[in-house]
Structure formats: structure tokens, C-alpha cells
Length: 592
Image (cartoon, rainbow, N blue to C red; front, top):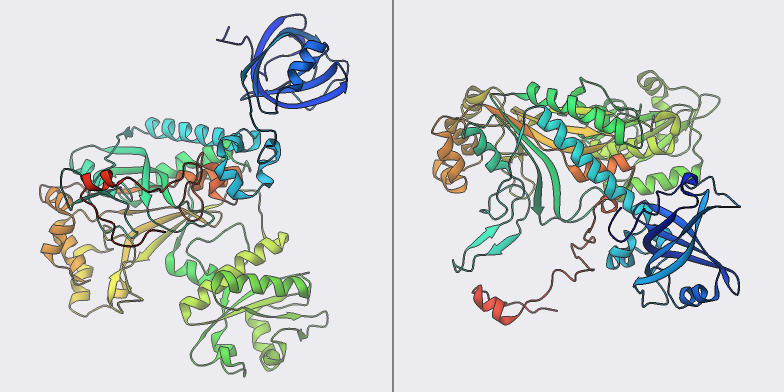
């Protein structure tokens, strides 16, 4: 027997008929049939049970309550005359002998209907998230999250990883995003930073002699929101391995993730080991993205040499031109126009197109510019009647990016070219170590500065001597991608102080800069650090994929809105002058 109740609202069955029971829950709905007769749906975490009101006294009590009030019901279970096969409790009902009000809902009107809350305005959902979470469809995503986290923990422990928590209050370091800063009351003018990731701490654990570390780590980044990224905070399965390289990391995740995706996912098919490995440059050329959705069978082709002199100005002037061919395409002109407009919004660049009609002639879009190139394009792209050809143009990177967006949208619009109901994993490898910064115009780290350059010191020295282009240097870095979503980045770490200094010298930072920015890690490495590697798949993104959701906010218990505001708790909020004085903080800008 449970405190305050004998059963949950999802537990009773026909075998319980005749028993006296006590249930507790939310009064979901009341359907009055007569003056003293009504059906009440009682809901708790576990399900619903029908309560039958048959007396005037009970009817008056129920009529005095608003929906979503919490009540306890004592009564007798009986077989329903009109059964509901869609409900686990659909064969029984409870006739109450006593009803007690536990928590009265004092609002005649709810901000939204609980069971249809997902149709409500998002601002109302977030403001009243405690009501939104009463919706079983919303609640189930949180249950799924708990199950996945539990399964991840067990899998990592079974692989001999130790769960170790790392500090939340730490020092600010250049991790690639804005820090959340916390003023230090005892140290005026100084600040802690919330960790963007436990990167340095987990590497320090490797230098401390721990062999395998993991945690479900909270990370804090002051970033803008998007569909697959929540502003403020997120969680990742953070892991690191000593005396390990890329293949060791791959082997662990290829063993851990597929069973979890197959068990808990919307789709029950997941890639088996080994996952495909695609070099970064190949991914950009073939798919127009470093996070390709491999469920789509479309690929990108380069037709620059063929169409550069076709007479269409956007294909000239040294621009790169990419093409994507969709066979047996049935998209109507209106659908094509909408798709092109959507691509332009997302990629910032307009795509172009033409079709091959039933007679094998080019028609629509840019067809008039392609007529003289028909033979070459037909051979290059293997064109046949019914083909749709999407084209993108611009500087190489922009043409690739636009092609990647176009490929993804064409896959979604043409079901015959997308095997949607599966989880398709791949590794993107051999990322560039350096790039030319858009703002600085100088050499900068492309991704993680802690990654080991492929070839180590020898490669960096060749670049320093001018024997190779620094932009040709790749890093022992990798991304894990699933269904077009980047789940994580990882790398073989640069554990050698001399190689680390040389890598930073390439971007105009000297030994003193390294010591100043990363004092603990640099000093630890000077005491003899083991080679180590790691990765950190995002838990939120993982659960979003498993739940089949488009927005990451659907799988977070209390998410912020797109402006990084918690409108339920009114955060961020102003604080008192006394609090500011204690922290030696003065607000100099006007606050709205």
C-alpha cells in the first residue's frame, strides 16, 4: 500500500473488480449526464481512471471544482458496461464513497487545454510549464530522457568508465563561445566562469592517472537559440580515455549508442559498427555539409567547368557551381519555388534549377542558359527524362553550404530519396587545424585548439619552414553525426607542451600566452601526460532525435525561450542594490 493511495490511476484492471481502493490525481475532465450523474476522468503520472458520480452530494462537490484540481477518491471498482479498449484501465470504473479535495484549482479558465498543450502558443507553454508537463505527450519526453540517461550511465560503467563530477565555478578560458560570468564576492573585480565544457578538467584527470572518465556534464554557453540548441545550458555525455587514440573512442561509442537508439528511438533501426568515416573535405564536396544526413541518397556534383561560360552571370567570375540531381522528380512548380525560397532563407543564397522533360529536353528555371551545355551536363550528371537539377553558385564555401541546405530540403520533399525511418551514424574526420578568420583575415584555429595536429611536431615545423600550407594541416579531430545532426565533437588531445606551444605560435600566441591562458593544463603536461582522447555527445540532441522532435525545447524539463529567458521564473531578473554592493558591481548602462 502506498501513502495516501492504494493504486495509481493506471494500475486497476478487471481483476480488481469488487475491491475498495483509494486513488489520487488531477481532475482532468467532467462529463455530466444527468442532474446527479457524471463521469470524471482522474489522471496521475501513471494514467487515467474513470470515476462515476451517482449521488447528489458527490455531484455538488464535483460541480464546485475547476478542472485540474487534485482530489483523492475512495470507492469500489466495478466492471464498465461500456468498455474502452484504447485505455489500459478501460474495462473498469470506480464508484466513490468518499471524495476529498487535496488541492483546489482556483482558475475557471486554464491557459490551454492540458492534453492539447503542444498546440498552444510557445510563450504560454513556457510560462505555465508546470501545466504543460501534465500533458502525457510532453511528460513522456522527460521520461524518455531519464531512461536514456540511465542507459548511458550503465553502458559507460559497463565499459569501466568512472563517473567523476568536475567544478561548475571555474576560470574563464577561450572555448569558442561566450562565457557566463559569476562575480566573486570575496575577490572584488574578479569573476568565475561557468564551464562551457569540462574540457580542461577531464584532460587533467587523465594526467592524474585516471584511465577512463565520464559524466553527464552540464555546460553553459551564452549562445543564441536554434532548433537543435538550447540557449544557456545543455548536457553532454562527456568522456575521456588515457593511452587512447581515435579508434579507441570510436569503438566505445559504436558499442554504446546503437543499442540505445534502437531500443528507445522513434525508429528501431540504427547503424551498426563500424560507422562510416568521411573526411571533412569529402563531406563538403559530396554532401555540402560537415553533418550530412546519410538517409538521403542525393549527392552534390561539381559542374563549374561546364557551365562557367553558359551566359548566366552568377556562374561566371570564378564562382563555383554545384549541382544536385533528383531522378523521377514530381515536384510541381509552386513547390519548387517554395523550396528555393526556403533554401535562400536558411543558406543566405538563392539556388537555381531546371528540369528534363519527357522528351529529354531542358525546361523551366535556367534551361535557356543550359541548352548549349546539354550534352556535357547529360553525360556528367547522367540525366534522364524526369530529372530535376538544382544548382548553387558562389565562392566555394558558400556554394557548398547552399548545396547542403538544398540537398537536405530536396530529401525531405522527395520521400523516395530519403529512407527516413532509421538512425544513420557517421564520423566526420580529418578536420582542418587552421582557417583564415573572417574578421581578422589571419590564421586562426578552426575548431578545438587542444587537438593534436595530424603528424605532430613534424607537420607544424614543415608549415613554419614554408614547405606546406598551414591551411593543409588537419587535426586528429572528429565529429559524430546522426541523421544530419551533429551529436558531438571530439579529438585526440595535444598532450605534449612543446607541440602545444608550436601550434599556438602558428596563430601568433607565444609560450607565455599558453601558460597564461591554460596554466593548470600546461603545467600538468610538463609532469608527463599520457596520450589521451575523448568526445562528448550532446544528451539533449540525442534525446531530441530519439523522440522524433524538431525542437530541443520539447525534451528539456524547464527550457528557456529563444531569447535565453526563463519566463516562468522571470530570469534573468534585476537584483537589489545591496546585492550589487556586496559584489562590488555598478550598473553603468541604462536598464529597460
